[in-house]
Image 1: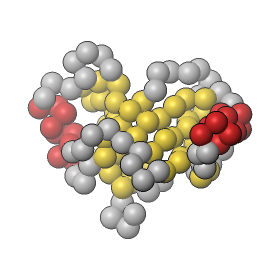
Image 2 (image 1 turned 180 degrees about the vertical axis):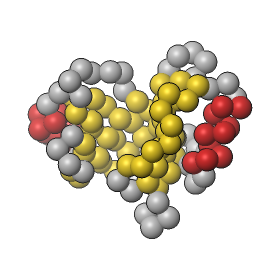
Image 3 (image 1 turned 90 degrees about the horizontal axis):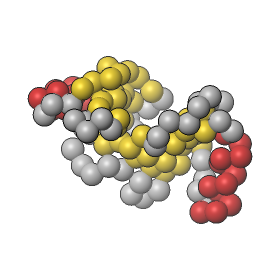
Length: 112
């Protein structure tokens, strides 16, 4: 497991949010459908997800073994709130830490 290197932000207006981050910070997004876009830098990845409401940002950890990471979260006292599922390019799961914060762990497919 490594340090968090992913942050998912919610938006009710995908076009305006992408435009803002492009104009303000030079971020270039790749669209993965109408409700999700992602931007990769050398050390950090940002995802934009279209929601009707705006929940808090969702930080994420990258792993090479999603099953082992899920077990480690359980063993350490975390609560799985969304079991492992596929997303374009890999798998991920969501969990809450003992303080109530929601985070995610993801693994890219071997071909990535």
